[in-house]
Length: 516
Image (cartoon, rainbow, N blue to C red; front, top):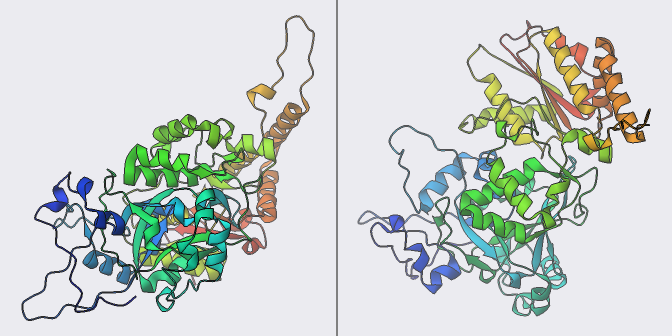
């Protein structure tokens, strides 16, 4: 992407108070609807030359990226500073000047990837951490065109926005559908970071005419971009090796569904969330409610009541009635261990400390065990809690949080953990005695479930520790164990499997570092 030519007229400036006019966005002219909300030009001091425009790329987000609480993962000094200087929000920040730091988020505008592009959205991306995420399927002609297009450096490709496939796509229109989402602006230099984040996907260019903007959506204030036909716009598409439907080892996760629908509600309230449900396929009965305390959603799930009502309203598509709690899923599908266990509630106001979070990730790539030490009140637990939520489920398929103040507290957590991992019969599987019969035989599934539960309850302390260690060692998904508030540095050794680093990582918090 190159800066605008000096002879090109600048984009028109909006009239005063345009950001606060509720009717403004509903009556944009056709050019704005084609090219999106306009970015206001920067004022220049008399006698100064205009600073060169930083090259940007645009990502069409159709899944969890719509939820701005996930954006802090990508915050970089260059990203945060450039975004704030080159884009204007449609509403001002009332906290400016009061030392209130807003959580980082990418500039975005609600948009629709039109049916003419030739793709559909579906739950069809299998993650290596054991769940199925959202992806898109390209129609045959669009897929062939994307294979022959250099999607790494589109600015050098004269056909990037004008290939024959773009001019003749009636076949793709037959198999494609509209997909709603959010168009995000990022510095062109940040694309490699996004490619790493979207491991298992490939970047496909999207001609601008296949986008339609929805400035009338009422939700989070949208950013006003001024897009030129030469600006690169991308969509991430699953690689063939990852493009597979859900199964018992790669279920849909309620935590991921929540993240996506919270993003829809954030940008466009119920209309956007409902449109997402109507235009997304691939829902599956392999649907695991992996959220902490899944039977008490009010404790951990943001907007759970709205989301569950939506899933139930569209249950003919979403299989909401077949969503299972962890122990039910284990009973039905003999699943491998995965999910969140024992985590404290997430601090929704957590900001900053990005360098420390990045340091945790980097160091855990080099070692299987890491200690975070410091005096009480410094935020060790908050930091590690945020790290866990950010890394699940993309980095770890299982995260377990343990109270490590004493051996007794760890044993109590291991006992509860083993009970929660042991399948128990559901009410429909428990045999019911009739007053007219002397006895009744339990069903095989009920008998097996009750026997397993009883066996877990009767185990000794050492047997429980050995069983949990064995299951962790045999786990087929990456896992993270957090030992919070460790009083005795050697205590964790008793509770960890040998060779844990092959699949798992251990994070410890303590008030004092062990002597060198």
